[in-house]
Amino acid sequence: MKQSLAALAEQLGCRLIGNGSVTVTRVSSLKSADSESLVFVDDAKHLDSALTSTAAAVVAGNFAAGAASSKPLLISPQPRLAFARAAKLLHDPGAQGRGIHPTAIVAASAIGSNVDIGPRAVVGEQVKIGDGSTLGAGCVIGDGVEIGANCRIDANVTIYAGTTLGNRVVVQSGAVLGSDGFGYVRDEQTGRYEQSPQIGRLVLEDDVEIGANSTIDRGALDETRIRRGTKIDNLVHIGHNCQIGENVVIAAQTGLSGSVTIEDNVVMGGQVGIGDHARVEAGAMLGGQCGILPKKVLRGNGVVFWGTPARPVREYLKELAFVSRAAKKER
Image 1 (cartoon, rainbow, N blue to C red):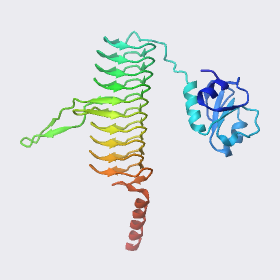
Image 2 (image 1 turned 90 degrees about the vertical axis):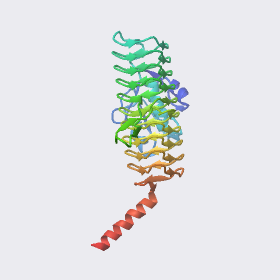
Image 3 (image 1 turned 90 degrees about the horizontal axis):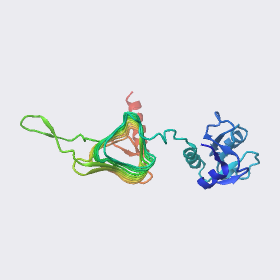
Image 4 (image 1 turned 180 degrees about the vertical axis):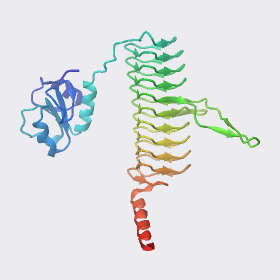
């Protein structure tokens, strides 16, 4: 989508230096840039490379405000963030405007305006889909699901009955939302397991993003909730009754057992494992492959944790050094 730099600057809140009538159609890396590209630099040492590139314009930090350049500049205190927002403004969704594909099966539901439903998608009874949302090919949307405005549900996503999605939610291909939780009761007489009730619901608030092939279970009796702005990577599992706070980031292959609470602004690396009923308090940062035992509470705003059981990284590294010295003495 072609945009003038003047229009972009206004929408991004950037300071424009240079010719605002110059237009761009895409964002690019410095290596792949062409005469219609917008590039960015967030370090002064890369500014010269950007200014001599073939790009039409550069998003840069305040350090570039005094640079001598014939190339237009968009100056932002957060150039990487401005560049990410520009990418969304320039992105052509392509699918918008196709409407409901003739092979889609759509039951009696409330469909908003400018909604796209792809080939062989199935939409159940009493589903609500907000304006501007898209459903990819092969999606299955259960009865009573609510999908807000401007959501993007990619191909082959399954959303179980009763799940609620807020506005601007993104769900990538193959994700499963609202499935049964892993809850069983053992019959002490026979040794067999029977499923405990899994009749709660799943709620995803505004601006949540779910990666490909991730799974989120609905609540057992109440609800699983993913709060506003949280971003979940591919291949993540979140068990029933989990409560995830706002602006949480969870990297790939992480697994949360049932009834885990993750407070606001927590960051998790890949392959983190968390036992049932554990709590991670606001602002904690968990390194890759951290392990948190059931019912434990991890607290420390801005503290980096590592290891199993997870502890502050300084403590963990001291323990590793001690073990290493002890091992050398034994040789």
